[in-house]
Length: 284
Ligand code: SAM
Image (cartoon, rainbow, N blue to C red; front, side, top):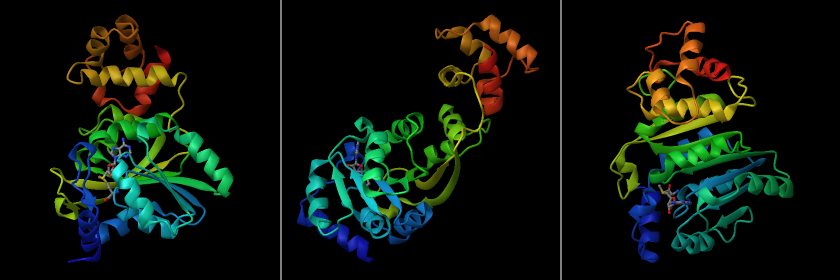
């Protein structure tokens, strides 16, 4: 058996830990997967790394050896004491006992980068799967000032995040990711790389944030609202989805716009490219 597996078993026994399913606790025990995540994130001593959900600290340990500073955000108080004891010798480690969805990440990054004179910030994590989508949406919509996001998530969600808009696998979130980032799939990870084993397959993905969004649009809020409406009823045509929604778009105006853009009126939202959504939203 490998060392990480032994270390994890030891910590679980020493601290009497039972993995909390509700908090998505599946601990990584595969050293190759951990090394792949760290290598893909391309972190160095100029980086501030934010790790979401450090758990027992298996990934954290490798991050601490490479990064200028690691701030780990963990909701489970039980893990906090373990992490404090485990990493008390590391001067570049800080732990926050918080719900990541409630943390002002931009402020945290700004303050720490200034204080520690760190050039860049990156997110690296084996995410809690029950809140993958809200976390990714928060990171993107809040325009978190980081260069990249390297995360392990459920394979099914990874496929959606890394799809090209218009692909059969795309959902509303595909457009958000594609608007802000270049995405790539790094590694598919089997159940056996964790204890306890999750029910689904996992995947490591990396999102490289672009300096400017992929398309220019007049009104971002309206643009994302239109995409949301289209995917709320994705089996319907865009016209019907907009007509049925009560979110301030006019079906008649949309009909005119589609005609002007030479787009078939029977089109479903899921068949439209990011650029087409941008044009429609600008003209509505
Ligand atoms: N990083 C560890 C590893 O790879 O072995 C643990 C990963 S485990 C999939 C997800 C971790 O996220 C757990 O430690 C869990 O307690 C933590 N977590 C769950 N919800 C959270 C939240 N809202 N904010 C911060 N951490 C959270």
